[in-house]
Amino acid sequence: MFKKRDNIKEVEEGKYLEPKFDENGLIPVITTDYKTGDILMHGYMNTESLKKTIETKEAYYWSRSRKKIWHKGQVSGFVQKVKEIRIDDDQDSLWLSVDIGNGASCHVGYRSCFYRSIPLGKIENTEKLEMKFKEDKKIFDPKKIYKNESNPTKL
Amino acid sequence: MFKKRDNIKEVEEGKYLEPKFDENGLIPVITTDYKTGDILMHGYMNTESLKKTIETKEAYYWSRSRKKIWHKGQVSGFVQKVKEIRIDDDQDSLWLSVDIGNGASCHVGYRSCFYRSIPLGKIENTEKLEMKFKEDKKIFDPKKIYKNESNPTKL
Image (cartoon, rainbow over all chains, first blue to last red; front, side):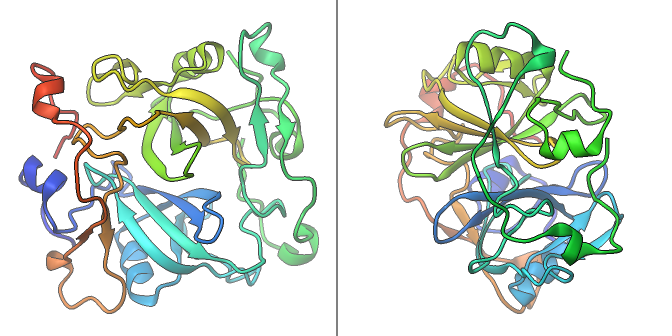
């Protein structure tokens, strides 16, 4: 769908969008809050969801657990209004800057999916690495919002 | 190496680090500048590079193009001092907040790998989507720094 990648110099320094999709047809996406800069989530897009996101200015991802296009916020109401999309040097990852107002982006109920911090320094036991919670309250109750939806987290 | 994932509730709400590595043994990593919050790069780690990063407080990645552990900055000098590592709800992606001083993080020479912005709105021709450059000068000259190193960008 997008311009063919046939020249490394053009991929890195050119002006044309030539995204690289992996063996599953996906490109990773980092999503940040355009006001605070905080990282909200890490997801994936296929060609169709990237095109829809560019055209509608609302974030569409590919749900790997549900195996379908996923209009973020369709169930929870927390639609992501896209302010900017950037791509990296070798055009194999995307950065979305979005407006979610006072909403949340994490299906567990927190504002950001990245609510736990890993301790740094010498590890005594890799199987008992205790993390710290960096968000202390949930924005919504997932049980009320998602009801019959299956949990996207897989073991 | 890390705690076994055997319970979704524990993965999402527990305090123990139970990272999920994909079919290639990798977990995606978002790296931001701890001062500005800007996204610097998107990379990958395997179990060994994650352990080394936690213990040394310097970022080690897995280079997919070179197929080896990659101590970021070993060649360029732009080592990433890790200030914080966070993990997301289902523990399948990481966020590193790092100090690179006034250095750069992109092998093309820019400070951030995300130096191009994709235009939003109705697409006339997906093969001719013209991006805008958001960084106007390079921090270093890759030809001088990398000399005989192969370019990690692949078509």
